[in-house]
Image (cartoon, rainbow over all chains, first blue to last red; front, side):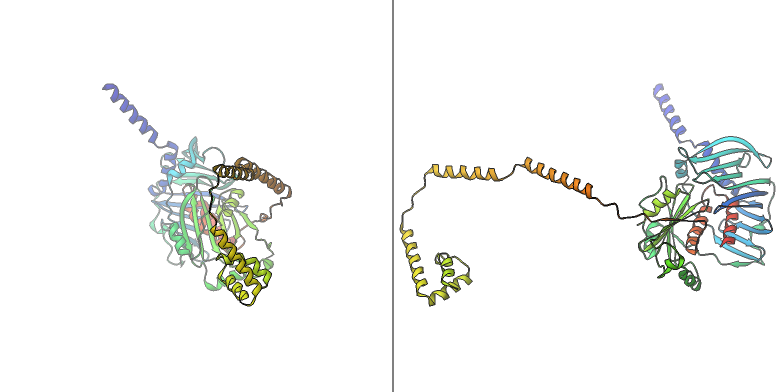
Length: 337
Length: 157
């Protein structure tokens, strides 16, 4: 009887150990939730490579229980970004203009991220005078992309971060130069100033499930026959017409009509893969005027954080956007028939 | 219908065979042709004589002999299943060899890849904007870098 009890206890402890959260991943998810818990002010330096061009700015940062404000300066230029949890608002002080963008609400599966990536604490460091743990997140096995987070030991807030793309290039890096966790930023800092012209929310399309999207689009939305390993469906969206009619007409003449378009988004838990489909409506003679090859080439843009691939397949145009190798992008695009 | 044609069909018509159309044509000819009528009467007479003869049973050995002869003839003509398989296999091999020797290069040519240095038009821009916006909501996204990217893209476009 005693032996049986001991065996049961051993089995229960083994099961609990197997279910225990990975401590590095636990620290990552705590850092994701930290902005909702803390309030602070600080100063960051941020860098991004966009379409091969390095960009850099410094910004004053204010965080208050889930709300964020960044006042940027890059040379003589100033602008701000507000994130109030529902919207992203870009303030352009020179024009007294506020551009509102609905903050996407996407449900990411943490278990999916943990299945596809490994998080490990690599070392300790100091950022803005505060002790931090450095956590690296990389794909299971070897390779890229890689994220590095410098997580404040006391608050779990990320004080420095770097992201490397699938080709191993550093694409974004942000570091706090100074931070004050005792600051209490005023509430009006997170609101659009009264003297700013508030532009209406930009069209981003309604968010739909896969079946609803297929029914809503009015043209057959095709699913990709090939997805990179680890990717699953995240969400769909449909954009009826992106621009006002005159702008759309001008765009069509230039050979770049924008809507209607259906977008399928997939994720591996951390990265997003977007597949946009729209009916091909290129005007006659367009290819000759634009000097493009008549056999509908694949067009590729490497933007750093992601690559873009566009191709025409029969009666539709397909644009694939994601942080994938060019070969993988081509394979995904060719699988949407 | 000529007399020679009629004589070809006459024996069939006399025993009640042939199509209705043929019988009609034969009877029409017989009405105007005395020699063919005489031929028909001779055939009918011969038929009546034959029907009066008594039948005799054939010996059993004759039937056995006939059956053996027919079975041997069928076996000679029908190929065995194994022979058929060999034949089909040989034909397949020949077709494959001919196919490989005369195969054409694939006609589907992969489209060329054009590499742009940046987003080229509003169509591509709309796709990228939606992606970047969704990327902002992904775990581990860098909000400070996202604000820098949004402003840089606005400046570029």
